[in-house]
Image (cartoon, rainbow, N blue to C red; front, side, top):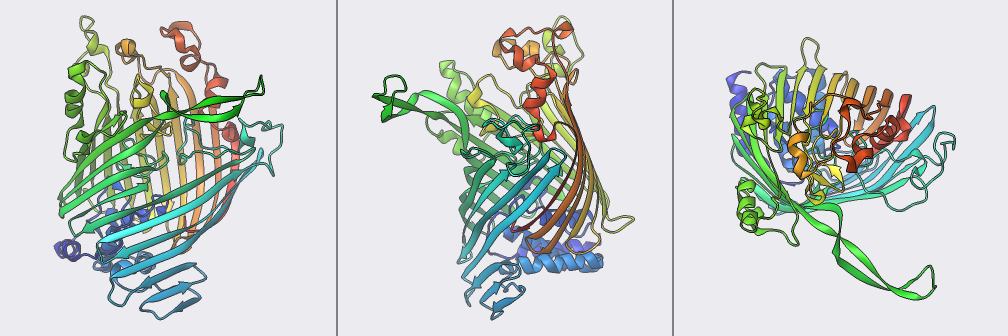
Amino acid sequence: MKLKYWLIGLVGWCVGVSAQNIPVSLEYTRVYDFLDELATDGIIHSMSEAVRPFTRVQIANMLVEAQSADSLMNKRQKDDLAFYLNEFSLERDTMREGYVQYTDHKTYNLSLADPQFSYMTKNKKFKMQIKPLLGAEVIGSKKGAIVKRWYGAEIQMDIVNHISIWGSLRDISYNGKWFLKDKYFPTSHDKMMGARLAKPSYLNNRLGLEYKESNDGGDFSDSKGGINVYAWFGSIGVSRENIRWGDAYHASNILSGRNPAVPQLTLQLTPVWWFQFDYFHAWLISNVLNDEDYYVEKERVDPITGGYVLHNETRPRSKYMAANMFTFKPCKWVHFGFGNSIVYAENNPQAAYFIPFAFYKSLDHLLTKGNNSENQNSQVFFTLTVRPVDHLKLYGSCYVDEVNWKRLKKDDPKDPVTTQKNPVSYLVGFDWTGWPIKGLSLKGEFMRSYIACYTHSIDVLEYTSNSYNMGHYMGDNAQSIFVELSYRPYKGMLLQLSYTNDTKYNQYYYIRELIGKTIAEKPFGKKIYQNDQVDLKFTYEVHPNMYLIAGLSYNYARAFDNKGGKDAPYVDEKTAEQYGDAGYYLDKFCPEFYQGKNFSANIGFSFGF
């Protein structure tokens, strides 16, 4: 990249645009893919790799940066750039142009073909967008079909260029009742007619959720929103949004964003172009009941006597998380970051963990060692992204649950610690894009997590929310390989051919007194579950946030027995969990709809995402 384009990018960052400091959903993958393509092609340099979601103003700034270097772009990229500049018009103090519209081109626009209402006062001090959310998708195979549908609305407002308020509601349903046959999916509340494709124990990359009560299918709702106060150097706010930390295309191993979003207090600082700081304090969902905390419900009918009795409704344990990430950009082609986090359970939030620039394990020792109580669950992590030449991106991340430097030494029978393995997860990947064929991209990603990574001896302190692992969806003692070839032939169009190999190895139950022996076991030894999957996907964004999707998929999900022999259990309390048969593991790790060998197809549309 020529020096002048680098300087133009810096000037664009310094001048910036200032409106709607609102996060853009991780599900809006097309805009994130486009920005990443521009960065890998060497067209933009201001993108922070490790922390997402981006805000609308961050994306608008990157689009403006790309506009200043459009001589480096091909026709399709220029068309996509114009496409997204229109979507992020309000952030640039201009009015969005729609299709079949009612507008004065200055203060309001009501688009009917791509439904959305935009409004901006003449002095630019108040801006607002409202849009409906609507979509449906049908997934079918020889076993039947599952219908997903969703509807809702989203509103975004910006006030005096310093306050952003937003909210959205999606009512979502998976339903297989109309198509599935009893011979494939027995009619029961637990099976839910096979329509439950996401559960905490399932090893797939679907977004986590909590189902509402129903007799069949799987209904749930997703309400997100927040308020941010911001200036040119950063923002502070309260929100409920999914977050992802760690550079990845398939699934991050630090914070994947897969668990249901949680309420959180957030802080982001960007005082200079080469440094970004991110912090949040989150109220997690423990799904662990506290027998000492309950409501008293009157006049419940006793099923035996028929009389009225008092009933205690037990409440869940409180659970929280604090985390920070320091991201540095020493030059245009290197970004690296490090941070730490802590998952803790107290009756009330602990004030010490509201300190953004802190090493939380040290604070944990201060708070717990004096009374000899158990530590909370702390972690550290690192990320690195390198773009050594245009068109090539190399990246990696490491999640460290616990580390002992002796474990890195050569095995010594006299020192059992040297035979143990640190419970860490690492991920490496690459992206080669735009050469020799414009629009063509080849990606590869490899992840491994060692035994006991993400786990804890105390249920309420596990690295989970709503029982979903917040790191990589494969959990501990697992491996994931992902390869994707993608092509962008025209504006808004994306073709993707990918292969995923997910393998789960021996599962060990975490018992504090035996953890040394557990992590001394051979990692990645005996397989208990494996899924190979090939996906062909077609995505066409007709208008911003207005999609047509279609795809074909083949997967082969199978499990393996793990009974006795040289792997005989030394923790006999959890025989089923650690030493189950193939059927046990297959039901636990894979939805019934995808068990065995399956060819499936899907087709759908959406307004919004």
